[in-house]
Amino acid sequence: MVTARDEIDFERFRDYLCLLARLHLDRRLRRKLDPSDIVQQTLLQAFQGRDGFRGTTIEEQLAWLRSILTRNLSHAARDFTSQKRNIGREVHFDGTLADSSARLQRWLATSGPSPSQRAMKEETLVELSRRVAQLPEEQQEVLVLHHCQGWSLEEIAKHVERTVPSVAGLLRRGLARLREQMDDSRFR
Figure 1 (tube, helix red, strand yellow):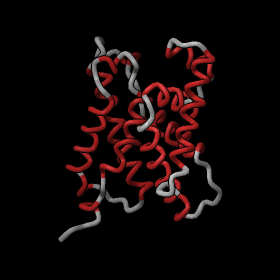
Figure 2 (cartoon, one colour):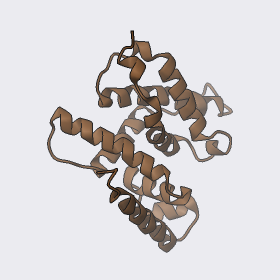
Figure 3 (cartoon, helix red, strand yellow):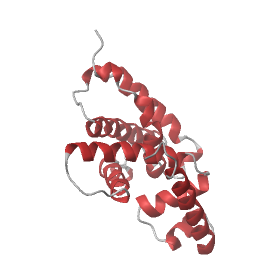
Figure 4 (cartoon, rainbow, N blue to C red):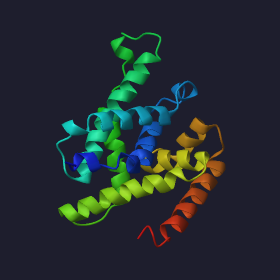
């Protein structure tokens, strides 16, 4: 007998989880650990634990996957720090992942709190994450830092070691490419 949990298409959430992992994995750790590795581990654990998943909506699926990703990011940060037991160095991702997801949702803001509209928003969020993942890495990073993290152009320029006009250009080109992709009839 095939249950609804057996039919969860975890792969469709890969880009969404990669986007969140890139946001929250310290840039210094990315030299040693690729966010996609953490996402792969997350999807594997979700698949293995699918019988324990009790939700039915896409919102519940995303929340469950974010909780697994949070745990994996925390473990990765702990494993790659030299002072593994220094409580002051521990990184807590629960709130920041939820906040990033909420910022993405606000970016897609739609009116109406009905369950079907929330489900459509979550589907759009997953699709937007897929589209962002298709952008060049520099454009992805600038878009995510500006729209998901709320960073100013000056902060981003300092972080990526570029000029403010260069960052503005990356942001403008990234948004233009996203708009082109969103005009695609498959996205509507």
